[in-house]
Length: 171
Image (cartoon, rainbow, N blue to C red; front, side, top):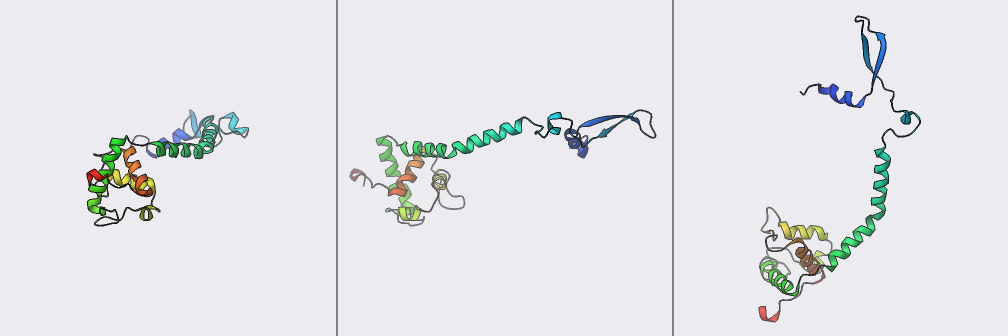
């Protein structure tokens, strides 16, 4: 047990009051714990810590701006479009590499189907995490070595919309 043990936390939270009357067996003043707050603003009905009202105001500001912030983040992720050459690479990767398990038409195989109707009820963040990190204990590998998270978000959005076909030259 650490020095002070259970009494250390009590010493940090309970104010000390010096009592001028002597103890029965000792002639020096004794120190006694008081349950009465020493902060004068606390006795006047105000909260003893100036940080609590500040934290409440900060939480209200965050809560008020949350939907707008979430919408802005959603709009930003929608606007992220890989360069045309990278789009071709990603389409080829999904159609060939992902297609080897999920079926060349992405209708299912060793892995589940990746068609819009099959992904409609799945959270996009969860799908992106699966693309990036894989599924432990399954044959699904993570693809973070081959694409960044923005590209994985693009792949997931395209899968949910209906993934593009391979260019004719690459079939």
